[in-house]
Image (cartoon, rainbow, N blue to C red; front, side, top):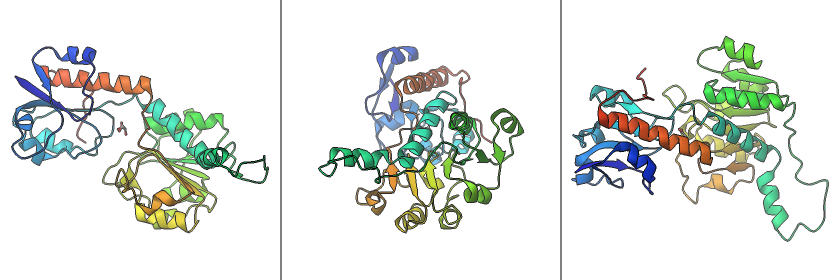
Length: 316
Ligand code: DGY
């Protein structure tokens, strides 16, 4: 019997399993030495962690396809897969809107003290309306800096326009089409950090963006500014962010992703009131997650059938 391994706890819903055809078994992820699931697997569904590299692939001699549930493939060494002739699929496009929604949600939550206000409104200290407490940063008209003007960055810009925000962006390459369409202005990273009230990280994790935001960059930000990380944890140096937030050097941060992820439960970052944090929810809406699953299985089915993946990751 041929096997495939989803890392996902609950496995796949039946209608999607039906897409694969008969004869496949689902195994939970098991990396232990000599695991027959690894040896027998013809396909693998991944998401986020763990790292899928050549060493792991070599322990899966029957592997025909790696299908990632998500767009970011920083945890997969795609070049190792290519060297072994194993196609890698992902789910581009379908999650841009949901992730942009969440970028704005975190921005708003931080700017307007939603989380801390929620706690206060439930607690014993809220006995009367007090117009002097929890005054936030007005979002409308504030300057947004977007790092990464890809599909998600553009969706964030569209939403920010409704808040009448001047929008700056930094990207590997200038994008004149986006400038014309969305009215965004290109800046060097340093200038973007200096000028923005909110800095949203919407770039992929690559060797160029790993550790992109550390103490030096955070110190360029306005004291009243907020950092939003919707990219990947390692884009920001965690210890530097902690020190900067603790010192009140910037107004706050809102993180959907962290390094490591999750943070150890006793990590000092988690004690800070000027931090809003979410458990990697960028694409977590019912509609988007359903479409991601469908695309994941479409890629898997194609790889198992030996045909071109509909959404294949190209090695650059
Ligand atoms: C992605 O698509 O990369 C999201 O982070 C979900 O994992």
